[in-house]
Image (cartoon, rainbow, N blue to C red; front, top):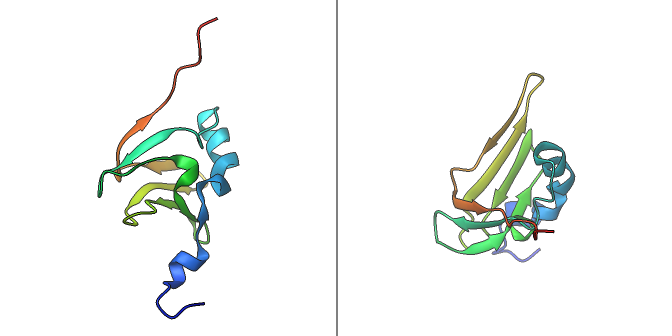
Length: 97
């Protein structure tokens, strides 16, 4: 590991690592949902964010500035999703039939 590389970055994977949990929670593929970082205004899909999953929950961070965009925590009583780091989430509509 290069000396300048942060240990947290080494432990992060892409947002696809939490795809199953997000699918269960939202009932749709969330990896293709667009978002904009409230910290640096970079746009990306949820699947392209950096996921830190080695804690009591998951944190999805902006790959450009490392702002925490989405935080997900599960307790025995509930699931919490904090998206304060996102300027928005963009859900594309399905084509009309």
